[in-house]
Image (cartoon, rainbow, N blue to C red; front, side, top):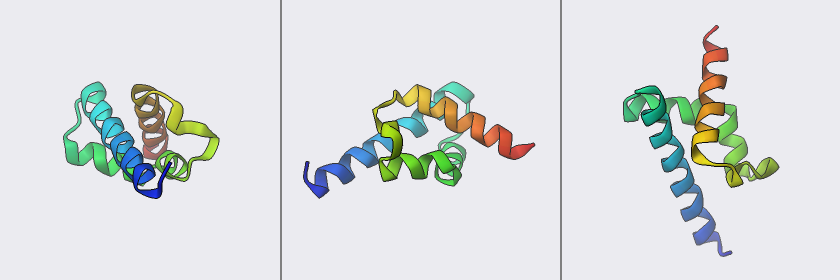
Length: 73
């Protein structure tokens, strides 16, 4: 996989997770993007740690939402 294709895959994965956050939790695109990019999980996904990028978008959106909810407490 070339560097360009890795970047394209990561961008697509991020966009799909953000869309899933919108659909699952009724968030605006801006709210979902803020939650995604502020999460520790997004960093792990982008770094390719623990093969998180292989998980479904909805699963990762749920993990990120739970992380966000925990942070809000």
